[in-house]
Amino acid sequence: MSIPGEGRQMVCPRAGVLAATLFNLYTNDFPVIRSRRFIYADDVCCALQAETFSEIECTLAADLAHLAKHCQLWRLKLSTSETVTSVFHLHNNTSRCKLNVHMNGQRLKHNLCSMYLSVALDPTLSYREHLSRSALKPKSRDNLIMKLAGTSWGASASTLHTSALALCYSVAECCCPVWARSSYTILINTQLHRAMRLISGCLQPTQLSWLPVLSNVAPPFLS
Image 1 (cartoon, rainbow, N blue to C red):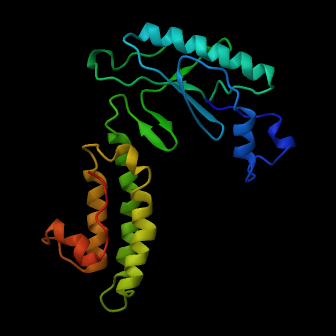
Image 2 (cartoon, rainbow, N blue to C red):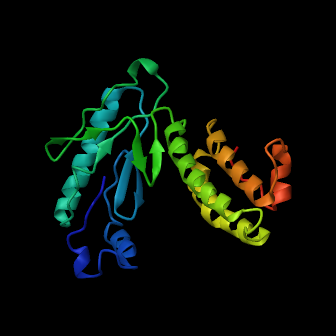
Image 3 (tube, one colour):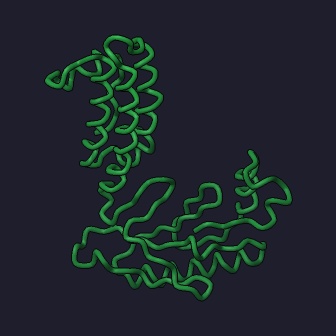
């Protein structure tokens, strides 16, 4: 859920450096609820584990009502339009089940694949969709490296090395600790292998184990 603070702009601009810190101080006394809370800036995530969907719905409804009452007391407004529900499990027969949870009298939208801090969370937490999207970014930036790697007029090896780390690796390794054990990391690895071939001049048959050595790039911790 997102909590836009009405009184925060009176103290500090919304995009100010101290905005997040002041918001954390202002919401430090959030009431204790059964769900586990994760707070980043003005985004709050409530997570809990249960055996049935009905138990999840009842617990979330009670917790959200408790938080809504506290926010109303301290003049904070819960954003119903930006609040969604999601479930994560391995039961294929209930993969399309939607939670029926209300907040402030309005039913919350249910997303089968939700975004949290730029990470796409699919129902089975395989991160396939997230890695499919993320692989497109280094792929397009690999094309820029290719333009710099011309045989007659191309940039030096050090320039290519620095450019690859800044352009390709920076986006490829974003949120890596979250999805590092996914079986779909090959989607990212393929693009990083391509970048290493470009900056080292290696051909396609070169063994993958030699690419980090020849390109002077530390092997990414992706699997």
